[in-house]
Structures are given as C-alpha cells and as structure tokens.
Image (cartoon, rainbow, N blue to C red; front, top):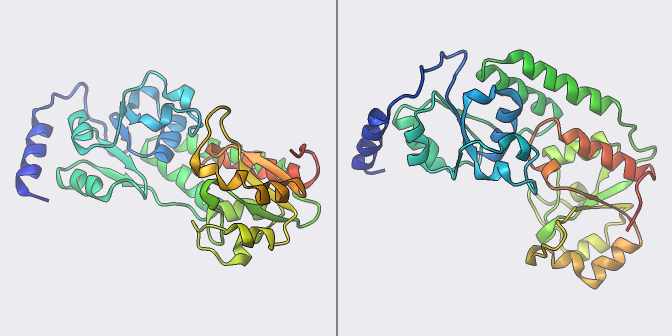
Length: 281
C-alpha cells in the first residue's frame, strides 16, 4: 500500500470533526458495520444511537433479516474512505470483508473487530456474545442466545433420518464442516452432500444429485418475478423430475446466510418438512 495513501487517509481521519464524544473500550458509541452478518448482529444488539452506518445490503429484504431495522440509517459500500470519514470507535468486519480495507483501517488506527464464520451452533452462540460484549451490552447477547435456544428447543426433529440434499443456485450445496451442515443435523437429517464429498462451498453436479438416493430436496425460496441465470440448473427437466419425485422444501436464503437467531428457522423448516408438515411443490 503506497505510503501517500496511508498519509492521506490519516489526514482525513484527523480532519473530520467528531460529532460526539468517543466511546470507551467497553461501550463504543460510534460503530460502523462492514459486512451483512455484522449488520444483523449490530442492529439486533446495539442502541440505534451507537450505529453510525451499516452496509447497503442490510436494507435489502431479499437477503437481510434486519431490513426494517436498517431503514433510515446511513449506509456504506465498505470503502476505506467512507469508514475513515465517519471516525468510528469500533468497526465490525466479517471474515470475507476485503482484506486490504481491513488492513488499511488498522494502519490508520481504526479499532476493528473481525468476526469468524461459525461452524456450528455453539459458534453462533459465541459470536452473538462476542458482538454483544464489544458493543457494551452483554445482557442483550445472553437474551438473544436464550431466544435462539428456546426456538431450537421447540423444534421436533425428524422422526427418522431422511437423506437431505441442499441445491442452491449454481448447484452450490452445504457440505461437511459448516454451519449449514450443523443445521441439517440439528433437524435430525442426514446431509447427503457430506457423503458426496464436496467442500464447504462446493457444487453438486446434476448427475450426482440424481444418483444420491435423497429423501428431501432443499432449495432456496426465490423472489417472484426475479429470474436468474444462477437458477438455470434448478429448472432443468432432470432436476424438475427429481424434485417432483421427492419431498421438496424452499427456505429463504436470508435464513442461511448469517449466524444469528434466524438459523433456528432453518432447523424448524427442515424438521417440519421431514415430518410431513410442509406441502410439497
């Protein structure tokens, strides 16, 4: 990174007036979120007055579970200049936030909390508590974890271990080792993609899906009137025949995307579909 860029950003940081007093390490009062998953936790756990900005993704109800909460808040597209100009006393970034941006923010002195991608439900609980503590509201974190656990406890797992295959746009699936796999298992199901041997973000060829001996097919709940090239495989005659011959459940992608209390909805819908309480297309 050229030194003149760092000097320019540092000068910008020094020149922008502070609108109100900086927060303490325990209770930051100027928080910027740079990742949709961070947006969702920040908007659930912070005082609204603490939030300087969230990402533009937080306002889109197709992918965000906090679109209502994000309405009216300033948004950014994650550019270093945007964040530095806001003079936050806490920046919360995700594992997939641009590494150069995170590195630059650290170099100009912005405090950054980077969130990992939880691999299981315990990881979700840990991350909720981590963000709540960083925001100065640990009791809200405990309440959110309690809400998650109550919803999970209300789910009746599948009465028998049906074989489930997730087929998302572009044939991306949920393979062994990730949070999605943990949610499938929490519903009492067998994750067929784990047997196929794909990696965490791998794809399932249509031929493999046909030969996988599945009981339940899980697809994304698409937005009406918004066709996508990524969905082409899901409209293939072979896949349509496969879906017609098996139980199929559609789950909005926003429930899978980020770790938070909404993941309990995935477990509930999977279990309901397995137990015959959901209609099949």
